[in-house]
Amino acid sequence: MRIEGYITRSKCLFLIEPTQHGKTSWARSLGPHRNFSINFSLQEWHKDVKYIILDDNSWKDISSIAKCLLFAPGKIILTDKYMTKIELDNDKPCIVCVNDKEGDIILNSDTDNYWKANGVWIHLREGQKMF
Image 1 (tube, rainbow, N blue to C red):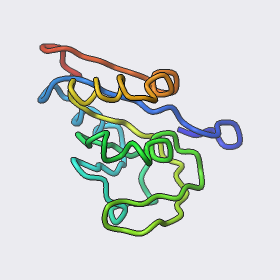
Image 2: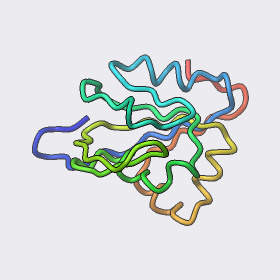
Image 3: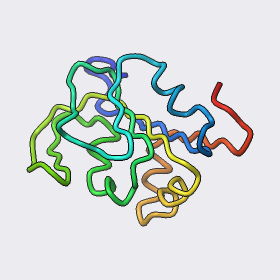
């Protein structure tokens, strides 16, 4: 979360693990949030939540807007497949929940060093559970 006047952006939490291991349930248990499951939609953006969850979103679909979404930099301009660009105030930290395959895509993307340095990564293997 932000500390007023001190933190200008958040780090993103990446939870990478197999399906049915509790990553989404754990992320949703932390407080008021907005869960973008499978697809990201600007129509579902809410100002009154504490954080956002991107759950099983394709990295290919969100990579062009990832920095604006994942690091809560303040004023941002976003778009999605179905809406024109809009300006938002993004002060919400983000939790990205993906399976192993999608996690590998992020970690092997052309910007992988950026995400490794600016994200917090939790990678659980088969049999390890969040809770």
